[in-house]
Length: 360
Image (cartoon, rainbow, N blue to C red; front, side, top):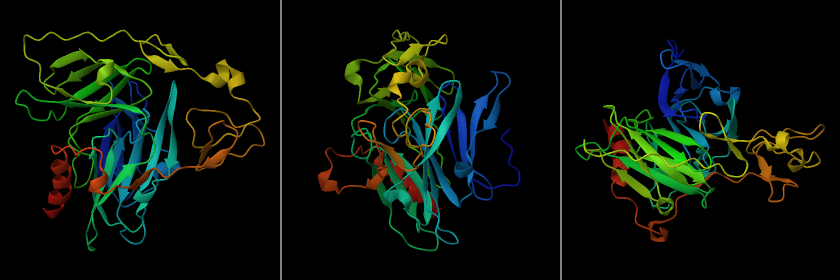
């Protein structure tokens, strides 16, 4: 269930963490454990199950919860924006690594410059300020101590593919409440919800942002709150771009999704999606037991006996050693070094909501 009658929720985000096509919930709790609910059950019997790990669920004075793919690797991250209420309270960042037929792996990451242990956080939001396809993080501060706004840029995944989708209503407004499903050539379907916001005093951008890794999109499907559905193909040339999706007119016919293509290391499941094979089971020679296994890695590689996993580290290029994990966020560059002008439609939206809502 979702009932927490004696606790104090501050921030909620909707996402599909295990990529099963159903909306899951993560929310922050001031007085109790943070929750990570996976949706279970059938269409007429919706249920939720909490899979939060002890570190993930650790209570904190949270103000905003953000679920987004900051490094465009297809795996979602969850960011907890805290306030230094009665002492230091650093922000926290987790990655959820999807697994077939099992719950996602929850890994804590190094937020880098976005740690802010003394930050008086009052809200956070994401958008793509400079149009490079990487989500940027903006944090507002205040409440008993004046602090400047912080803007952070991701330091990982800069070469990964991405796609941003903006559904519109029949009147041209942002389609809050719309569901966007992106079908890819190798990794199946990815779901995003254009929700109203996930923070205590902030509102998220009205954009479905998809990190694709090295994959490409084949088609997308948008479902509006009134039940209208529109599907269209996505060309390879539209990779790494922003797609505007207008509300469909009655005479428009939906475009069928392109055939699913599964790449190397993936196989097509009976549900019509591509699943990632467990190479360590199918092909043991690719997972030699004499090499170190680092904790913060993708997949569920098993640790050899008498080999100590090193938290906060990741494998080097040839897999022979563990190296220090790179900080996830860095400070944003000056305006003069931006490669392209920021998207003017989203900049005032995010900044205004973070500042003006707090002023109210």
